[in-house]
Length: 576
Image 1 (spheres, rainbow, N blue to C red):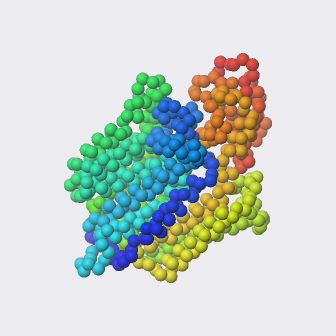
Image 2: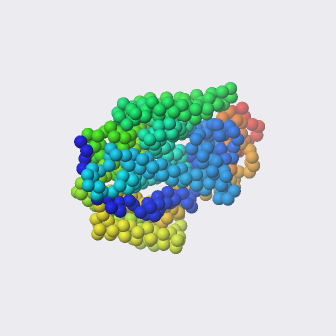
Image 3: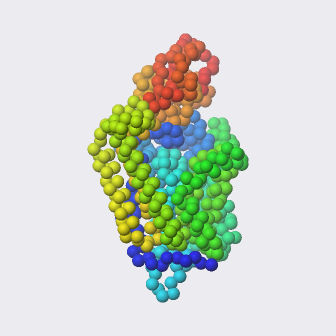
């Protein structure tokens, strides 16, 4: 059974300038004019920074200032450190790393578009057109690809995580590359298998073996579920497996060599991989149950609709590939004993592609409901963003001003004309988009998602212009690091740490250029972090150490840092 598909696709393609503008407004805000932010953002940047400032061992074993991070693969940080190190003399280390992550995010969007286009232009999902009155297969494929990209950018859970200097944007890009390789394999099996295999290897070098095995499982099952893939499976699968092994194995083999530290890192990485797929817990299932409905909105309801409407043609590549990939990645997420957004992110790309295939079959009432929700929610969100920002700037009304000020206590607001103008232009563009969508009622396939995507872009743009100084004040360690650097006169001396979290460690390594100790190294300096109620109390004396400085961020009174210098002779033990 083939579902009814809208065939009136004249001018159905989203104008290229409009699509590129939406992508630029989605990618760039959040990467401009800010410091490393706690928690994952600063920690991810810290790994790339250690590579930029370090030696070959730092590139082989991801770490944050000599603190091993076995849960992270090296590939995303190799890319970030390579581009960041090259650009550092011109724009600085952090801006260089942000540039690399922005480029990876742009690559992910491009690969997702091409994967959807390669599948949608195939005959199996083209509209029935006995009279030749509908759009060409190329135009129809582009309209579906545009829809997939709009759904992907409109997905709520993707937005913030894609603008952090972590491995997550790279992992989404590898998923998109895998889907593109599988789509290309229908016409060029060896080339497509090579790309899919490289994506599996990149996944192993980014997020570990669990996600890579899920993608490999998709490759194995595809020929069983689809006749089109049965015809090319004997040529696609061998090249994919060969490339995956050739690209993925060198790094683990180097770690497992003769070097003691590298071998220890390898064993820790293997242990983390086994733990990451050790099975669900009640806490993880509860986390995923309450997170997934909003995280995958608005992709998941349209994707479910597509699976239902195409239930008679599940063997079509445009349906079976994203459906199998989303299912495999979903099972991989559920296999984790702890809930985290990082496990949910990979499934966003196949869900967006599946939703795009279902877009032509949406009834007018469903489209109107999606539009109504987008206009209402994002217009309200825009009003709230503006209202609280004006209250913060003017102090009126007092209750709103007080609540806004609590986001970053101690922050001194300043009027910045550029941000006001940009925010105003974005708001006017949103109003123009709403007016165009409501007044003209266009019949293009992507019509149901243009307001959702535009609303997400509007909200993100306003937050990353009007509110950027506030969020930067709340999440940066710059001021604390300046006080720490002023109190530290040890030069290149090593600094031991106690309970120091990854984000703070990375930030102090960046801002204060502190040389943190490796495990087992004796130091004359000690940096301690206090969390919770103890951070509000007077610290007890630390025998053998002299307290030189203590400080904390103004926005967090439950976090305090203390710097000590050793008194007298160096003892035989130190705290880490």
